[in-house]
Length: 541
Ligand SMILES: Cc1cc2nc3c(=O)[nH]c(=O)nc-3n(C[C@H](O)[C@H](O)[C@H](O)COP(=O)(O)OP(=O)(O)OC[C@H]3O[C@@H](n4cnc5c(N)ncnc54)[C@H](O)[C@@H]3O)c2cc1C
Image (cartoon, rainbow, N blue to C red):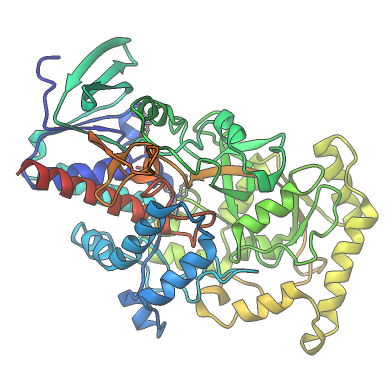
């Protein structure tokens, strides 16, 4: 292992690790990235991600007539985050990020990352204001395209020979001497060989903790009661927080681990990449969201695009903590999607015609695959048959056919009375959503559930799916890892140690507080990694 020498060691080859490496190579530093995963998964979760990115006052917003400002974005962020008073670093990072989205955007453009012209409007807020305006910019190519552009840039870099990427290598320990980090202890998981490697600086970019269901359960937020029996894994199998523990052994502060960004509409992945793999659906706005009994949840109907945390909270209030979405084929084709790079082939493969056809005729291939392969996806010709099949799936007769019928018929009757007499919050929100062109194409016009032109009926059993860790290793505004506060509440840095991306709670050990405005994760990974590299360069000059 004599040739294993570099100026900087990076643990983790997700987007944060890659961005830091690019910035360091750009400035002639030598770098080694260690990643536990296989080479084909270089890029980590970002490669699987939807590729939605939060920008403020972007060219796409301006072209669409969306008036946005950093002041408004900060107001929205603070409203959603509900920051605790002592989360000082989280707040500082939130502000820094909002002030820097333009810089992140421009940096990505120089790496040939392109964006779709229509900006999506997610997390508008329900009881607390969320995104006042649309800010979710889709990468043309999804997260897969984003990562492929960055890897291409890396590989064609004039200093590429200064980079070594070692896959199947697990970082096991952070080595420190007299309080200064000096290297890493690493294990090659293919031949079990262990070795130590040394450098001036180490960056932890190993993702969050949400890939470990054990940790997710341990840190389950008190607002959600006891954890559900089933929680699917929507994160990375190696994002298990082992280096959070290593950093803690060096007295790093690791707050906010109970703050998580989990999703409500997970189904068991039918082509799993990892154990207990969950596929997170973009739930149709026109579907009815019911509890385990087949009863519509409320009093405010559950709908996507307003407050994801509310959805998770409501489901977790139920005796059985999973839910059902009821719709029909027409709604499923028009509105059902996957929140990730998978099953979004048109945009992932950058094929405009394929993408447009999926908007017009629906994602027929995905619908077919769900029928054929997903145990959580049921179709039926009438309500009785649907209830019977739902009960067959759970095996416990939880679904009460009369409650199910009542939930569906009440909603359908409301639609039948005509637009002027719609008196249902879901219908009011559908009317509002359809005023925005980004939603209009993807939201049916007051579609009844039982409608012979739209059959069959569809029921999807949905579990909570773990996703992002909003807390993590606390960092200052240079991405340097901070120690726990001393008796006078002062915090020192750990010399030679940086953290970036999800490992750092997207900056400061929790820059989102309790809720995220969405699409904010990829950008904060880019920013925290760039800042780490910048400070390393500054300190070494
Ligand atoms: C399906 C999906 C859709 C998403 N969509 C969006 C979106 O639209 N917008 C958005 O902003 N965010 C989205 N996200 C979130 C976003 O992708 C992640 O938060 C982000 O990519 C995290 O990047 P990271 O580099 O910090 O960590 P990761 O991507 O988790 O990478 C960490 C890397 O570290 C490696 N590793 C872990 N432990 C060790 C160890 N001990 N030794 C060596 N290597 C180790 C892992 O193998 C992995 O490669 C999505 C996530 C998923 C899963």
